Image 1 (cartoon, helix red, strand yellow):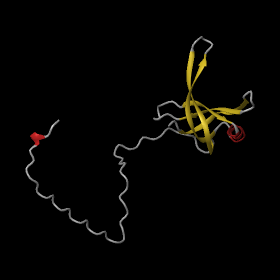
Image 2 (spheres, rainbow, N blue to C red):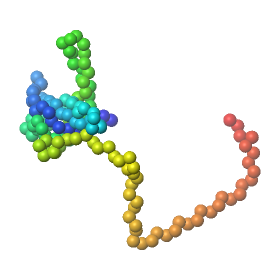
Image 3 (cartoon, helix red, strand yellow):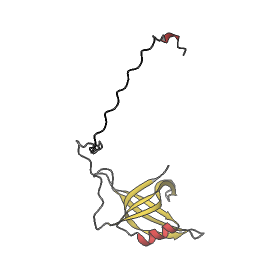
Image 4 (cartoon, rainbow, N blue to C red):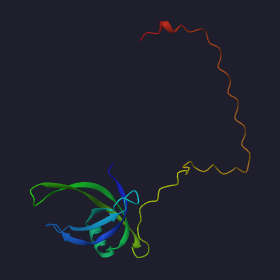
Length: 152
């Protein structure tokens, strides 16, 4: 299944255009930080169709932080230099606004400390004691099995 959730900052205001049969399409550029602090930010085009395109045009502005849900696609673009270029594109199905960039800039994720433990926390102590598990009976003795008679 091709599903993607991306937290990003809008770097170019959404542009609304229409197909020949009047289907609205909104396109905007978004960027998100690299995996490590020294990695550059990545930029991708996000595209919404239909009613979502109109909502994107009305509610999203440059500098806003958003969570985008959708699917990744690859588009081929004919370059004037005579070759074709492939670019990733996010086909948006939902947009969740997180506010403006002025409130707090996006940063790259911080690496966990070297001694970090990712085990889950122990379960909380129960108020009533648990009964001890019943002992498991020992297996009954079996006759000697001749493994040479097993056909393979």
